[in-house]
Image (cartoon, rainbow, N blue to C red; front, side, top):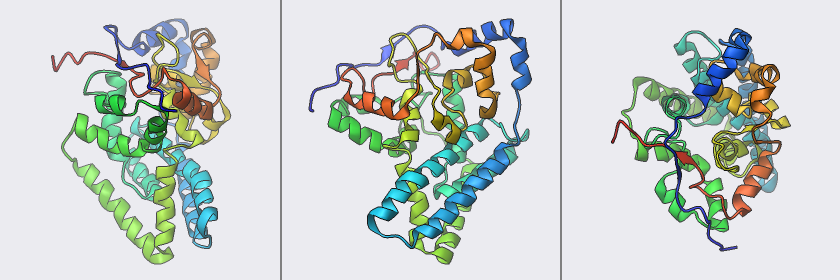
Length: 318
């Protein structure tokens, strides 16, 4: 159980990320894919319905105690709040409305169902993950050197998976800190004001259901498998991986991750169409049909750990 992870350094490459080139190749052969570009208003009713369901579940949970409360929070609460996180992923790309402000405001509504303000900060760093995938300092989706050195055994990797929400929150502030923006401040005010009103009306236990569900749903939880499946090196030489399983139904198709990075202007609702139009580009790539299986393999394979990522030199910092 204490066997050390054999991967002790990031995989350094001198090549560009693969998505820009593949996008050009796909559009040269399938220019009709451009017809899929642009916002999809279906995201609005979906997010509002998920928020309403999560809040109703939180109120109901006040009737439960002990393991019943925990299982409902982890199972349904974790799924719904993570679904909202992935809704905010869509909104960070302006894939609901044409105007950025409307996407940001809907993101704040989503945060009210999660109990934690995150949509504006997430967008600030996530877009850099696309523009500078794998680049030192800029891409904070990649674990820090400290994570790679410390979480180097199976028990520690279990802890690392559980603590994913903590690392996603703190890592950007340590690796690539940025000034707090006005919209981030507004995001915090809106979320905490709603939290206060919700707790006052329905009790602190209802509020904790939202917050705990958000944290649990980002740790050892089936839908959280996408954190690892997307870019950790499970097959030598491949940098991004897609998942084509049923949990895409509660994830806005974020599993179609190669398709998403190739075409970030296409909403999740339409990403399966990209694969259907251009299967010759995606079918040969390694992919998954189980996020739970990804988490299991990450923990028990001795060649996988936080260092199992591709990195590129930050030429601006050099």
